[in-house]
View (cartoon, rainbow, N blue to C red):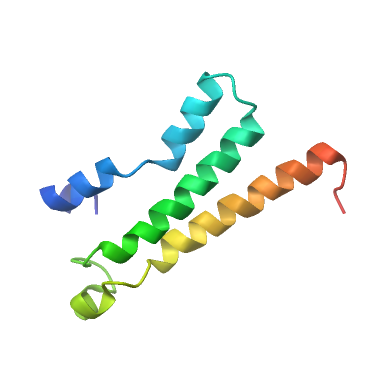
Length: 99
C-alpha cells in the first residue's frame, strides 16, 4: 500500500495519533512501559474508530466504497483489541496472576 496511498489519504493518516509513537513518547517521558502500552492501545482504539470516516480506495472493501463509509475497519479494530489484551496480560503478570 505504502507509496500508492493518495496524498489526501496519507495526510489523514499523518494527522491521526499513532500507537507506536504514543508508546515511544510515553516511555521517553518516563512513564512505566506497561502504562505507555495501555495508552498506545487506547490510541489504537481511537484510530480504529476513525477508520469509519474513510472511503476505501484499495483492497477488499474498495468495491463497496460508499457503502463502507461509516463502518470501522475490521483489521484496525482487531489490532486495537489485541493491543488491549496484551496490556491486560502485562497488568496480570505484574500482579503475579498468570493463571
